Length: 143
Image 1: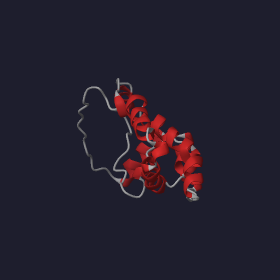
Image 2: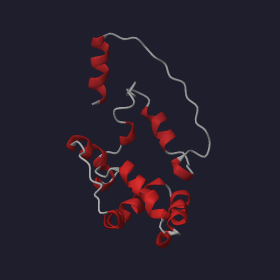
Image 3: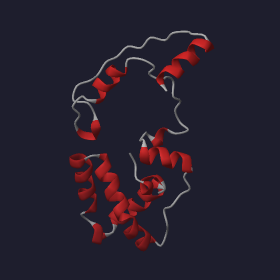
Image 4: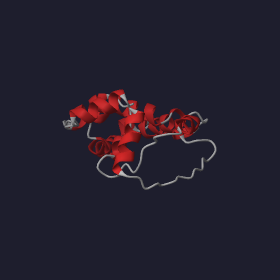
């Protein structure tokens, strides 16, 4: 899940100013520190560190980094989870209507850096053509 700060912060702008900050002699070790956090603690810890740096960036460059974020999406990503950087760029192409035990097994595998599974997971999917009536019946079962 994401924090509200992560979602309401213009990360593209933050990264632009972060590069400028790292170039300043008084912040010489910052790049190494951020790289270490990213590779040793993962993406969540890295994002948290960036959010912690916002006051420094705002003071150094006299600018803000807030952006509007739809309230409905904010609620979902801070309570349920998800992948906000895929919004408006990718389409959901399916939903598991049976076989959740397989999804749970995949979710339980051991992962390494960046939450990538230590061993690749292969799967096959079956696409079935069904009538709207059958589809409605399936969705009613999973709710």
